[in-house]
Length: 344
View (cartoon, rainbow, N blue to C red):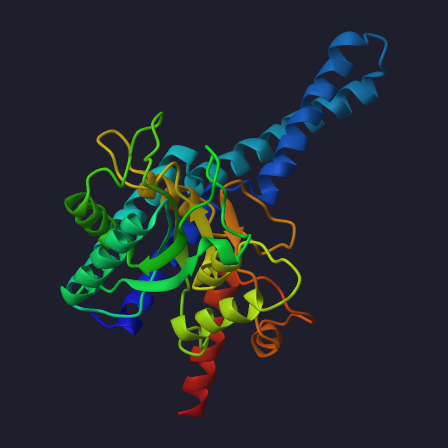
């Protein structure tokens, strides 16, 4: 499977899930129906509690109640026929994630390169652990795993790196990107090298290394985005060269590989009872229509930092640049496909 084929599959998953979510969302008809039901209650109370109403007004209210009820019953049936409960949407989210995971795994297992939907930042406490991690990454690459180092910097040069909870500083900050299907592969390789490096406990942190992982919601298409690891590394270097302090440079860089990032809990690595990657994906896929509006916000999610280019914004009908989001990306793809077909 090649990257365009994988992106096409992802677009199909996004489209299906957006259509399903639309059936869950509250429609304008439902909002109006709710107001009509409230009006029915008010009218009924008027008849029951005010015995001195004129016959003409009483008859009019009674007829209105009957007429309104017919509309309520008809519209309610129509809504019920197309509406799905939240539990059904949840089921579709889980099915979509399963389908997504199968596609990414097939792509990675067949030797596909250049698709990264997982970023893991590692903060080793000393040189030996740092070297062990580098060795693991190099061994995985030699064995065909598409894992790339996005950032590898000593801690003392920059103040963006997190301080250890128990004092002092980390030896380095090391960030890798890879397909999410290889997270377990990386975990097993690190454990094989040194089983003390990773801790999956909720209460006990590893004394050798801290981890901070994010799932990156991948773009619906990427043919003309020109986002490469080299361009991200240059961006990181440029930001670091500025005299003023900038925070989370690396996180901003790898988030631009997709629509937004979803944070994994604790070390991020899978344990006997918890699958933090799956939890992060659930949050992302449940909110895949996020960031159509500037003020959209969900705890645990963070949008990519740049937004659409002027060209893409114009194609979408926006007068100014806006945040990249799944809904507009699918529209953009349709526009581009129509343009190509007209040129043939």
